[in-house]
Length: 388
Ligand SMILES: NC(=O)c1ccc[n+]([C@@H]2O[C@H](COP(=O)([O-])OP(=O)(O)OC[C@H]3O[C@@H](n4cnc5c(N)ncnc54)[C@H](O)[C@@H]3O)[C@@H](O)[C@H]2O)c1
Image (cartoon, rainbow, N blue to C red; front, side):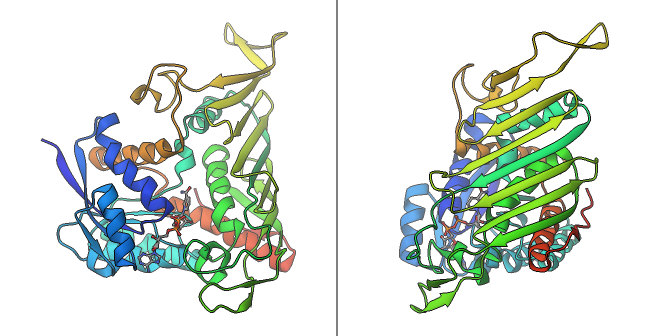
């Protein structure tokens, strides 16, 4: 008999949809013992929340997240609301003894993130942050290739995360849909929104980032605020570039902007090592590119006359997650990264082996984000204090 996993979803926006889809499909694809039950969705507009609940099959609607967090018929609180809400909801959920899944970035800053880690660890509740790109099969394969020692000594890590939707000066800031441009709600701009993903992926694959030096820019200094109706200063970073040092001796460059005309969700990375390289581009998500410089023969490394970049179509059953889906050569999509993350989380709850990234792990990404913002303000190298 499947055990019920009763869900309280906070937020019905973009992430409310991706997460709800994952809960609904979990048992169709993964052999876990829990069965998600969509108990309650919470958002401030009851009509819109009800319309969402009707589509996705939530049993009830709440407009105050406290009611959901304290409801005895809910096991797991899923925080899919804007960044400034994560702290209070996560702490209350942990105190109420609920499992907590939280969207990224974990918090507005390191201070909040540390208290959130304390809360979930004190309450001993299972927790995870939705850094879903770790669950792209091609990215998980890159991690496997690096862990197998195929890249050799790492030298360079290069990440970009580019979009183009804020170029027009008349895009307002704040309020529904545009809270990302309001620093009071978002905390930061592209650093917390986009680079948090790149940093999480980088540290998962290439280890701790120890020092950074950054430059940020706000191209449009004033925008109309949707709530006040007035022109207000823009406090977010529209673009950010930083240099990084990794604990393993390699160096990295990270670039993010929402002003790269033509780029919609251009999330790429490349790692170059002595023996090989890997390259990933989210605009071709099912491919991982791998350059093998050294091949092994009879236990010895030899230079090969057949070296070259390989474009691996990561759709075989031996590729991460793919045995749960279709036949080789067919693809999965963006939504499956959330399904894969949820499946790992539930399997972790069932095996007692906590899944990553948990809050403590996501705190390390928050440390890098804070160090980047601090460096951009001071024009100095900043030590991150990351502990992996
Ligand atoms: N993992 C990813 O790839 C990814 C992608 C997009 C967004 N995110 C993160 O997910 C979170 C939500 O982003 P989104 O794009 O879904 O935003 P969104 O604007 O589409 O949706 C936000 C939802 O939160 C609700 N909300 C706002 N304040 C609330 C409150 N006080 N109580 C209850 N509900 C409230 C809104 O009504 C809305 O339903 C953010 O933290 C964002 O950074 C992560």
